[in-house]
Amino acid sequence: MNETMICAVGNVATQPVYRELATGASVRFRLAATARYLDREKNEWTDGHTNFFRVWANRQLASNVAGSINVGDPVVVQGRLKVRSEMREGQPAWTSADIDAVAIGHDLARGTSAFRRTQRPENSVAGASAQPEPAWETPPGELADRQEPVAVT
Image 1 (spheres, helix red, strand yellow):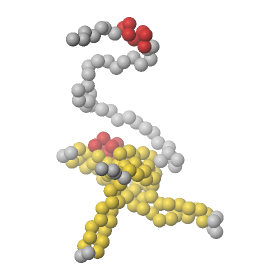
Image 2 (cartoon, rainbow, N blue to C red):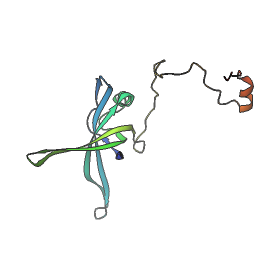
Image 3 (spheres, rainbow, N blue to C red):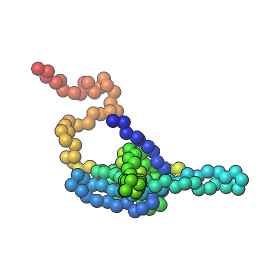
């Protein structure tokens, strides 16, 4: 199934709401994306129509968003667009445009941000090997001399 991936740039319109669910962390907030255009008659920038999106983030992204994003922050959101609507008595009752976020970040065209990497628990990677990470800075010829031979059966 093809999904509609979008990238929306706007401002956080509501305080992110964080919840711990049985399936993991989840956060939601509303994003306001307003088109701006140059009004040539007045020679000034004018706000156009504002689109509102409900943004959903899950798991680690949800935890990071809850600790990083506040109302009014300029952000860039990438994710899957889901448009839902409900009919009542044969008439459209409401329509909602949701973004199931894959990535969220501050819009650095409009400010600065200080990135901090999150710490993972020691045993978070299932099936991780106990072997040390390769020495990437070592030339390939030298690395082959240091490794122990592996028996192939």
